[in-house]
Amino acid sequence: MTVLDIFRFLSAFAAGIAAGTLVAVFAGVIPVLRRLPPPEALRVKRLLDPFIDRYQPATVVLAAISAVVILLHDLTSSETVFTVVGLAGSIAVGVTSVSVNMPINRAMGVWPPDAVPPEFEPLLARWIRFHGVRTLAAVVALAGFVLAIVNP
Image (cartoon, rainbow, N blue to C red; front, side, top):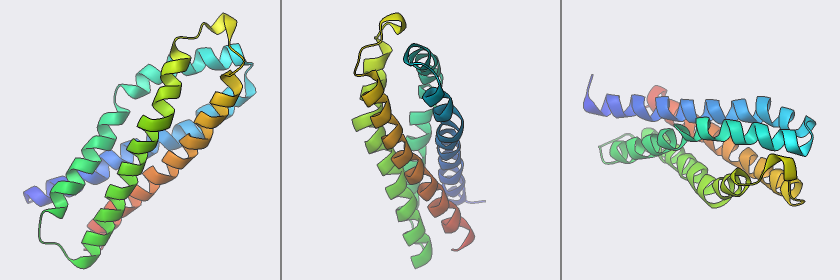
């Protein structure tokens, strides 16, 4: 096993955790949030966010850094293309998270659940929409990194 193999593993492993988390939220948490009244949805979201935010950003950053390290090596053209796809997906997750989803999380994190402001529902809808974007980007990133490994 080479150092390059370790970074290949890290890119796919970290991207897998990131994509798995985002898919689980998309498929499991969001439908629950949509069914709850706004005060309950806000409570659930405020309870979940800190646990996910504890590790999720690190997985996306690790996948991206690993991809950059991989791209510094002499690669086949297919491995380069797939690694770039993985890196682009990871960057898209990070940009969407930092520019849209995390600011919404911070805003909702200070609202009292017993006095939910009227902007909650439109903001939650926006958060859900962009969560879908970053989930798709995370799955693309994972696919790129896996394809780079199995199709060198």
